[in-house]
Length: 332
Image (cartoon, rainbow, N blue to C red; front, side, top):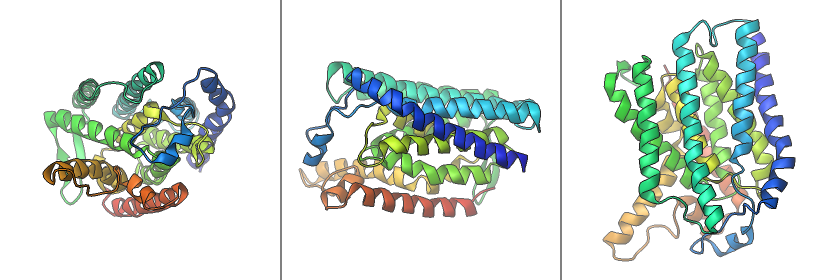
């Protein structure tokens, strides 16, 4: 009962932190002229979003970290003790995951900063991004290996000891997830909205990993608070700062509860959005100029077909919910 109350308080604190901070942060980003440069190859109606402040991901990043740390401390010191101090392995995984997610957000922040300063929608080069992402993903895998976090649950196979294979596995998982969430951040409210049912899934399956439960609850509340400003029509964009942090944080919680394979069904929309880009490029090259979709990622295809942003958000979140229900039946 006490834990449920604190989890609710954790999400509420993060929600209020992100939502209320927007009243200061959004005008501040406007003042700094941290406006998004809209791609010329995108839908023409996106040009009206030119100048909307970006890097708004700092709203939910700060709210999530502060709320989670505060409530874990309250729960750990005043009530149960299984969240942190009584479980060194869980504590280690939680800190390692948080640092990994923050590093992912840091890569995004650097990319956003270059875009804003240079006034172009390019940022870091592909090679620079991949090298930084590989370093973060590989470093996270190494931390789990050294911290004894290489025993993972694989649906239909049970618990499997990955040993040092956890390192390349984490490198792949982190890189894939943060790029998938980054590509999905193409219309107002989509990337953050999709993460909500995934976090609810993690909250329900993270019994025994109280620190991860609080992290998921805090992140859920922080994203809802951010959507106050990011839902269509968006008053602020999360930027790569936010989208890469989302991918990193979802991956961190999944590995923290030792069930990263749940990301496959739960994050099906993120994955399909990323695969649509790969398929579009491959089909374009194989057919010498023909396109499989009107535009990729696939959410832009539906937009070009006349779907409104709120409709796309609703449908994609609904599909994610179905994926999360499937993942729930595959849990340990």
